[in-house]
Length: 227
Image (cartoon, rainbow, N blue to C red; front, side, top):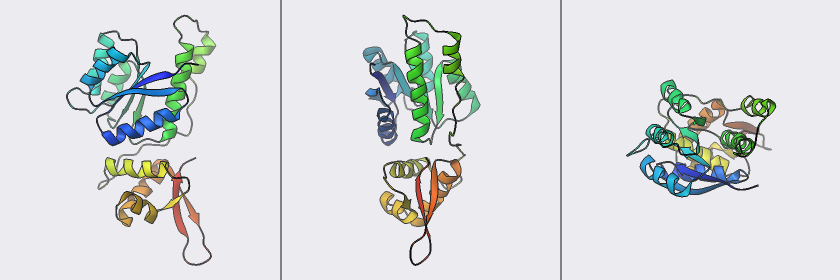
């Protein structure tokens, strides 16, 4: 089966790299180009004709809402998945009314974007321009249940999204569970600060905490991406 070409529009360089890595971990998806704002993004959409655009909302020069409106106004044949920190229902409704395939609120896990991309992959195959679909095909596509999606909570006072992303990405990259001290050293923050973020990520369902008992001393809490 052919590659699904993705254009990624995101103004934060670190988030862009994380999103790119996540997308390309899913079979058949390839990020062919990136843009840091909607104006450049639209130019690249016209030039490269991607199958899918992964779009942020809060961006300089031209935000994601206006970008999606222009995509639809120009009748560009491209699908859009929104990944953004914007969680107000007016924005969510506006993006969905303009044809967003999915809406993912930051911070999110790899598993959440993987589910969105796999569902899109099925959609892309089902909606071949030369094909036809049965009602069962469409019901399986649009009404398939998504389970175990971690709950996104409002960030508590004193926590910031950038540090949260750094910690989430650090844990995602590990092959084994890490303690709060190891996370703090890996990110370059205080241990007590790391614990606050880790507690939040456990509550949101993004990571899980395992208690490991040694031969001596107190047990150690270790953290790993939720399975």
